[in-house]
Amino acid sequence: MQGFAGHLPLITPPIVWYSGAMTRVKIIVCSLVLLLGAALGADVFPVPQFGYVIDFPEGFSLDDGSDDAAMLLFRHTMLPVEVTVCVHPADSYTSARDALLGSFAALGAKGDVAPVRWRNQNCALARMTMRNAALDGAHEGWSCAMPLSEKKGWLTVLAYAPAEVAYDCEQFLLSVLDSVMTDAGSLREPGIVTTQAFPGGKKETLTLSVAGKKVRTRIDREDEEAARFVIDREWAVFLPFANTPHAFAAWQRFYRLVARDTMGRTKEIAFALHNALLPDAQKADPENPGAALAQMLLTWTQQFPYARASTTADKADLAPIPSVLRGAPSDCDSRSLLAAVLLRQMDMDACLFVSAAYSHAMFGVALPGKLGQTISVGDTDYLVGETTATGLTLGMMDAAMQDRDQWLPVLFYD
Image (cartoon, rainbow, N blue to C red; front, side, top):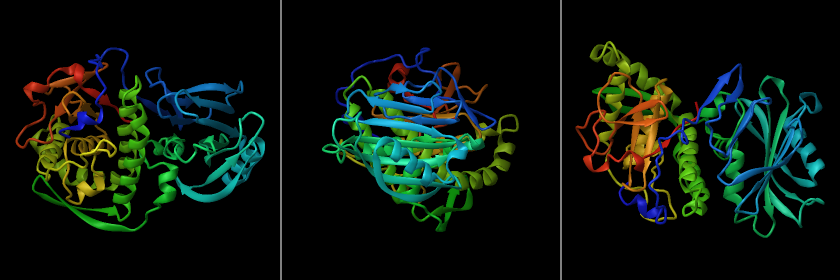
């Protein structure tokens, strides 16, 4: 990640990130209803009564809506983009396609609706045009529909912009749809847009050498291309905010959405690594095998070949995790993201830390009772993991990078 600060040339704070203003982005799943605490970022919008969450790009505000929240209108403060979210009663339609066409009829939209199999359910996705009395001229955009859990209804999301700028806003619109989450499983799976573009299903064997073991697992042939699709899109969404007050929150969202996609692509890998490494971790540290397991992953990532993914500001300096797992060169943020994602899937409290000031990234893992350098987020102390220097153990940190105010936490959906 050396040189990464060049991507953010006008971000100038120091900001104290670890005050009460920045606590854990936490989604607690209870009976498949998403209940969110007040600590959520302003643009992570939950509707608990219907059980869905949308992690909007920064800058959206709720502009209008019905009293029962069945219809909500969001507008962006910087871009000419609007999002209409509707929930139709479960018995009003028999398919996601029909629910989306129902929203089209109500809002003066039309488009060709394509089926999508997402979250093991039949959903729908469409490119659309829209014209109605509330809009100034023709608008274009993208829309999706899916069933909500526990038969709470049909969710439709329509994201659109004036026709003359809709193409320029397309990545932004697709990002909105891909950030929709409707149940616990969708917090750790690729979004509906990415799933439609890369349905996968063709697995190939992957052998990983970790802690002296050869671990056989599988990865999808499309995963590398799909991961690059998400990275490139979300970086394009981030860039307009790079030199604005939204910059750091937008940067967090970039990594958060990439992490969500990565979790879906690495869950089989995480399972295989956990099963292979846990017996040795239990022997190495019977009282806290998680610490030994985290150290194994840290040592493993430190041995990866090093190279930056990009040296230009218009491309994200982040290697797709599937390519890293196949042996492609990587740098600090891709390695740290990989370690944090694997630990989260092993039911450990892990996160990512990034710093524009230091042009660097590390991962953090909560290991009570373990000594070393930590960074605190709210009430949780995360022992840091430095992935780009071989031989360092958990809790070791470059002396020149120890100003905690310069480290930005990226906390995943929980």
